[in-house]
Amino acid sequence: MARTVAVLGGGVGGLSAAHELSERGFDVAVYEARELCGGKARSFGVPGTGTGGRADLPAEHGFRFFPGFYRHLPDTMARIPFHGKRDGVAGNLVLATRALLAQAGGRNELVGVAHPTGSLEDLAALSRFLLGWATQVGIPAHEHALFVERLLTLLTSCDERRLEELEHQSWWEFSGAERRSEAYRKFLADGLTRTLVAARAREMSARTGGMVLLQLLFDLARLGGRADRVLDAPTQEAWIAPWVEHLQDRGVELRTGAPVAGLEFDGRRITGVRVGGSGPARITADHYVAALPVEQLRLLLTPEMRQAEPAFARLDRLVTRWMNGIMFYLDRDVPIVHGHAIHIDSAWALTSISQAQFWGGRDLAAQYGDGRVEGILSVDVSEWERPGPRTGKVAAKCSPEEIRAEVWGQLSDHLDDGAAPVLDEANVLAWFLDPAIEFPNPTEATNLEPLLINTAGSWADRPEARTRIPNLVLASDFVRTHTDLATMEGANEAARRAVNAILEASGSPAARCPVWPLEEPAIFKPARALDKLRWRLFRRPAKPPLRVTADGGVEPTGPLAGAMTRVAARLR
Image 1 (tube, rainbow, N blue to C red):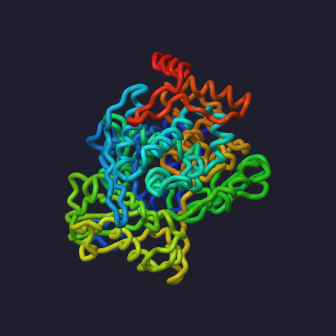
Image 2: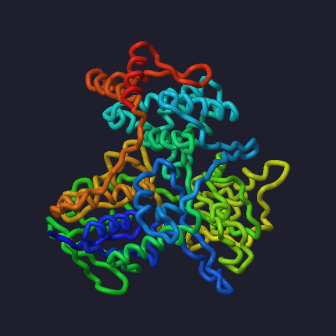
Image 3: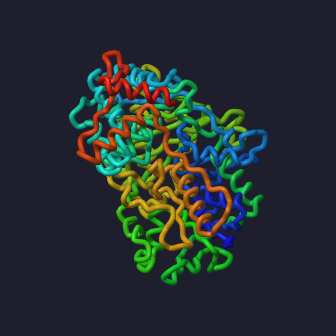
């Protein structure tokens, strides 16, 4: 049986594949271009900032968050040993209990978690939760009802309708945002989806955006739910470094500073890979796992490989955009909110989190930097093509100093509009911009690590993990997965699918990696079956069996719908 595997890329997808393969007895080597593994999930030190025996200040490509609906990634994390934690690295996840929707010049809104739910009552509780919040932000009750009706339509649609119809509509179109109030557009159509980061309401498919949004809402409304979790230390310390150590203990070879320079193909199989850095310039293995970002893999695919696997040609249609992070190091801790803050009116689509409150037991001043830093504000900049109100320039055309000033100004616009300012520029000791953004001159920039974003209809352009080249599989966030977003969860699921393909190809009797679909309430299973018939026979519009009541609850639309919900409830 073929036993050697070369994993090309040491991000979450590559490390996940190496983990699963090593547990199943394969000889694995990982080749990573950077000096640190972890890909976009890694954290790293700000060079030269640590003094007096302290570590360099921690920085990152963008902050990490782990929604409650993630199943694949936490399962892997639980199998990474961590001293003093029975559930391994997964024990380093802590709950963020609030989200802040911060408005410029308006009242900021807190969104809490942990509301009780039941069976059919699950959806009623979710609807009432949304109604209460929607009322606070000025969304009319009838627009709340329409929004919930849209969610119900998605939940009761069959898979065929979702892929053939809803996949090709944008979430903006499907939610009817253009015809609704400004508050509806800001908070429901656009604001809630802002948490998805790798998507935009006007572009992402209704199928993907709606289903992932539903997962987030279910977590928000579930008693004891885990809608938002974060790590209790910098990512490298809490997760990536222990992972690398565990893989090495299992015999995985990890070679960093080894970028993939070329793939050798004989017309049927991969025969070798050319890599840079120190060590052998050419490597061979029985199987190859391409765990590279789509923008890198596209450059490596030869015309012959594209002919052998037609799906490779469609990779050129996948869209990437800039989504990068900036860190502010403060001389005092500014918690802001116990979770993420979505700066909902910000021109550059900012989302932030104050880290120190989650890093329990760590004295930042004693452990990092020069001994003065007490707080760290991590900010994701998701919009690089819209002019900022201060510079009048898009972020991609700004200098680092202009980016820093514009981001801080937009944060202040959203947080300092009350009687007591939250942010004070005098507290900023230092700042650090994601080094993936390179500045050859003051007005031009390139991004070494853009992020794949979901667009309507892009499912057809995503490949499966298994390719038609028998010894090449794909394990990256552009692969078809249940999540269908460029996320750590998607990369981990893609790796599991890739490993399962290798197990099949090699005839291995080892257990297959589990892969889980997104959760859907069982109560809607009969409705989806009925919609499947309606879609196949008539292509009729989806018609949910429930409607929203005046108090925000939900009830069956008629006797048939009532019977369906009663049967589904008994089958739970």
